[in-house]
Amino acid sequence: MKMKTLCALSMTALGLVFAAPDSACAADSNNEQWDKVFAKSDKVDVKKVTFKNRFGIELVGDLYEPKNKPEGKMQAIAVSGPFGAVKEQSSGLYAQTLAERGFITLAFDPSFTGESGGEVRNVASPDINTDDFSAAIDYLTTLPEVDENKIGIVGICGWGGFALNAAAQDTRIKATVTSTMYDMTRVTARGYNDSMSADDLYKMREDLNAQRTKEAQGAPIAGAPGLPDKLTGEEPQFVQDYFNYYKTKLGFHPRSINSNGHWNVTSALSLITQPILAYADTIKSPVLMLHGEKAHSRYFSEDAFKKLTGDNKELMIIPNANHTDLYYKMDVIPFDKMEQFFKTNLK
Image 1: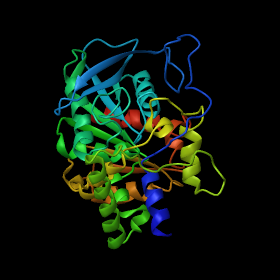
Image 2: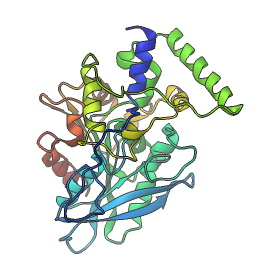
Image 3: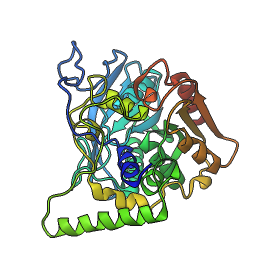
Image 4: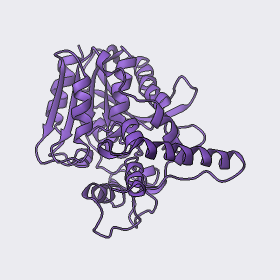
């Protein structure tokens, strides 16, 4: 694969989508205010909440609670991802489903994206985005109905990598699930399957820093390349899968970068030089990693799993599933396994 094509596909890993489809996000016929791409459950209550990370950025989340909550303090889970998505997409679906199963859950928009704060918009940062998970933990510990010693996290796609980094950093996280994980730092620095050369990487850094100079001198902020506006049918299958989720009524949301925007191209600079799995081997708490058998990204989970230590780590490969199947397919996402994992380990 030539360098230009390789870099474009690497940036596609960021879920960069430009054009919006004709259809809007799914609406619930019983609630005109429902703005998620999945149907509203009648078993949970949901409300919008805000909290700040340690950088002072205000984050916005949806808090899901079972309608028939038991008395006493409960287990809680913070959820985020995929990379470039919003809480009204996959993370909300995961949060709502886990709330139906007896957890208090929080799906949140990371810094610089969705309804959360942060300027300039559409920026990714390994440090700040890792801390976003810890900020969600901060918030959950303030809720009287949450047991602060029984909090876990779920990271989907690129936020799976950030979730592992958060678990290495924040000992308050008692259990971690990653679903269809990407290591955004690895794929940005090395390309898919580590196929970029050292010269390719240096040239990319030169180009990105040249763009910083232009922007410092007054040029508009450049957006990273992403998925095509229309499919030709010749794209790699995983690109078609991304398109079919983010660009159609299946998963489109107007606030999602992947559906209706683009990442800032210079965000790649910090992703290149700040590998987020450097301390994965220090995670002592339980970890469950989920990935599809046929996902182009499967190697990220398999390689990350090899870094983990202890007998409380598990990698589950879902037969026949691709990368985006774990975004939304209720008959593919192993919620029974997740429920068992969290109920066993959040104690």
